[in-house]
Image (cartoon, rainbow over all chains, first blue to last red; front, top):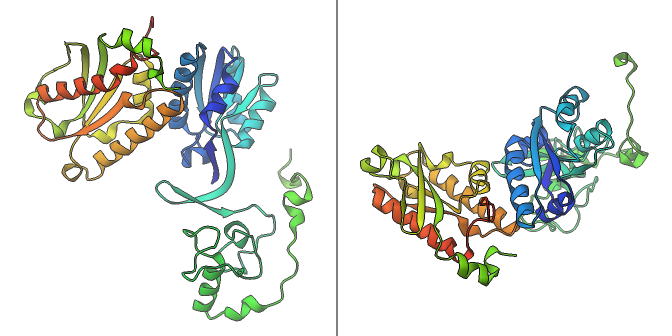
Length: 223
Length: 150
């Protein structure tokens, strides 16, 4: 899922302090899964912001809505009936949702309420960890299902750095396994250790952000 | 800035009636507390009570909405950790209370406006004592700034 976290409350309060009527919009998909921007978080943040602004002598009306997806126009359009009288929107969806609202409801200012930071899996309740870096040239087939781009602190592609701890943890984060240790162990378990020594062609980074903003056309799906 | 930093405000508000909502687990109170509405006005405190199937039923938005409505403090009454009928219910309630207190602190509200206590077979008298104790914890900071007309 796309992972996001609330921005510091003081930053959100500062953004809204000069507005009178605000729509706080959540998204029931990824950011709900990571407990940052779903309906529960919208209904938590709204009273908090009202209380904070009231305490600072600013009276504000905040209405709320949580869309099924803020990254699909069909769902975004559902907000139209709620944007008529607002003088600002705060979105706690990922950056895609924020931009969708900004485009659809221009010239109403749309503020991000979260920082979108990673593509994660929920390892356990209250713990999310990065699994994908959207690098555009997936190597998981050669690394036994562990992504060194997202899960190595240095995104090393050819093996561990020299800093792996004795217990197999990463030198950058002692709670995190060295991903190359896990790759080597799995390769060994499958009797395919030799495959890691094979020559690999240079990774093509041009299909990620390094090649400029992504834009994909599928003629078979176009109308 | 914490609410209570204004000493003049404190002194003026200390002896006023405070409004406390008590949310209590049905498994942690006596039959007498279950069978009657013991919400009441006592000396310096107005108490409103609501029984829940488990203290873990408290949700963060729910508590914040209560505070937003102007209530001065909320006391959650949970079972002792090892007596929780749902094993982790009271623990979850405790974590949510801590989370709410952190949020309140970040927006400059007194975290003590939300608290949790534990016990079994608690009588209406004991529950009222807990409400008074919660009121006393926030009394130095005055009334909730959200209270209408304040």
